[in-house]
Image 1 (cartoon, rainbow, N blue to C red):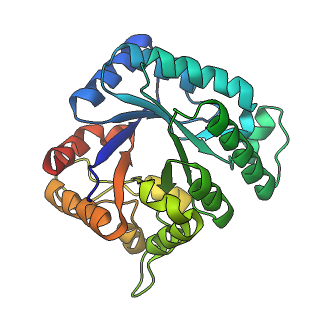
Image 2: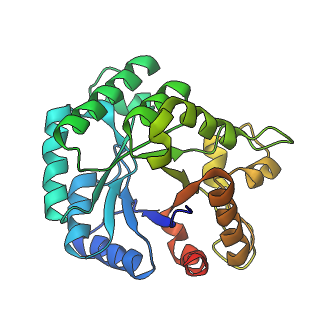
Length: 274
């Protein structure tokens, strides 16, 4: 059975209540299914912003993409999650990650554990939610073996980064990561929703995306390689829609997230896929 597409958009600014609620209404009107807020020091606080967005919408789901699990004690985080779940009438989806920015841990006056310890703590938080708030869908996003193993065993939604390189010949990093998740998930795999985050796409008629964001995370790749990366879309709205259909047909990816500046342009892609 082919899964229906779902579409998410990030919200990275919250200057006022009116701005947040206007952005949420626009996302809902444009056909997006989920509004996401990230979790970085210096960015808007996720829970107040998403609560404001929930009050202004009726069908739009609210999510975190993604909370740094290391910033939170499980029981205290669960209290906030339960409140937002209830205030949004069940529209909240919890996105979690292991955290990776040392400077943010230091600014929060928290120790910066090893990668192994951060993933172990992510698993602890995820297991707590499975026991205490099992009705809240959990997304875990990442690329490494340990993190994807935790995601495959515990999450409802797997956020895939597309890998650390572009496909070359028979080398398909995204397919390899999905095969890894399938093996780790076992019988759970068919019930999982697979997600990919788009970090660059055209916002005009040129068909060329601004590669600033993917360059930051994949500095070793050339522009040509970045244009082939699964997190980058190019061409017309029709071209991008075709590529996303290919993602669904080839990889089983049906949930696509774009960034706030992409929302208006991506609405034309959504229209072609529904």
